[in-house]
Amino acid sequence: QVKLVESGGGVIQPGRSLRLSCEASGFSFNRYGMHWVRQTPGKGLEWVAVTWSDGSNAEYGDSVKGRFTISRDNSNNTVHLQMNNLREEDTAMYYCARDLGHASTWPTNWLDPWGQGILVTVSS
Amino acid sequence: VLTQSPATLSLSPGERVTLSCRASQSINHYLAWYQQKPGQAPRLLIYDASKRATGIPARFSGSGSGTDFTLTISSLEPEDFAVYYCQQRATWPPLTFGGGTKVEIK
Image (cartoon, rainbow over all chains, first blue to last red; front, top):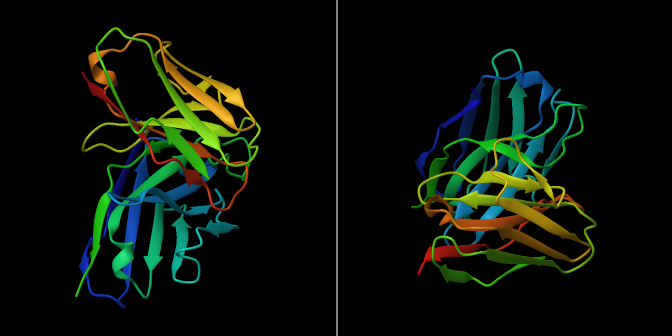
């Protein structure tokens, strides 16, 4: 079955960098766009980024643009989120999610399924 | 901006539930609904306003277009008590979510 497993989270000081990974299995990874979404108790769900199935393009949410980079390794069925210059407001549970569609490289932007999430805490 | 109402609903099993999601501008039919239970990731229920995702029971249905959307659960099952979020893809980036509606046991 489809499985997404996030890793790389933890406690990190403001201004530092962290790299999240999401290992996928149970489907043809190179046919699907992949997203990162984060969730905090105060701000709810916030979409972070998407990468096209072939890695040719990516889009970002406004609050992370210029600091975060999404990338993928289709040979290892993994998507990454490189987070630089972290701020306390980046503290959240981070989920990777598969895009619903695979008919084209352009994502449908419906997210299904989601991984179990990984916690990132930015604190001095 | 997506606005969900009410913030909380207190209901009993077997009741019919109607959740609302209102967009600040027309988003055609580009809306999805997700369910999230405590300690779990969200799960896609409905996309394109009315299409059920794979494996979603028929008691879940979605309707609406433009700015007003509804998720209906025809008869609440015990496992349906959760938080429900709407999400739009009409104007992106970014994809955006509503603030959620919690359906709790009365």
